[in-house]
Image 1 (cartoon, rainbow, N blue to C red):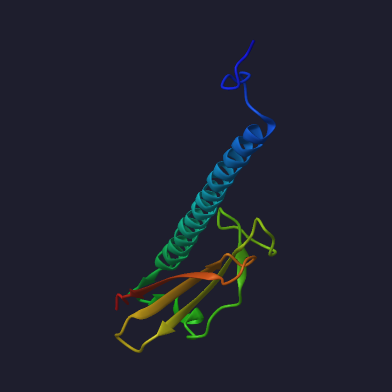
Image 2: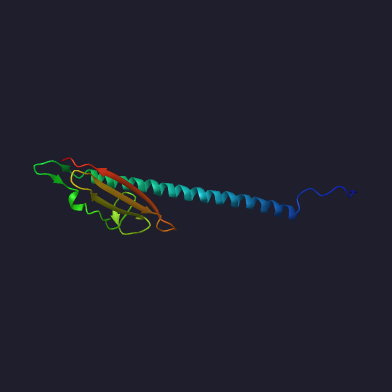
Length: 148
């Protein structure tokens, strides 16, 4: 005969359900952390792309020839109005296209002529993260010296 102190081996249904509940809570926490890490990685990647696109644009302006003459060649003067350009949407490679999830970097630039003998001020802004909440902006400003 069995005594009252001896019990059947194994787990009850309540014990199994509590163990499953605890495991699910732990997995949900891990899933939330993983989602945050993936989101942060995407934001950092978009920021790096925005910086590269802004740098590319600055390099395009640096490639414009300004030299002494005769005659003086100044390729920045025609665009040096000081006004911001129209918004252009770019893909990851810097190609201009219509706004879409793949073309989510908005670029604007301006060239300001500060006067005779003074440098041009070139500014480029890249705005991204346009589809969720507050947009993020990367801006580069440089001075382009005149050679004459």
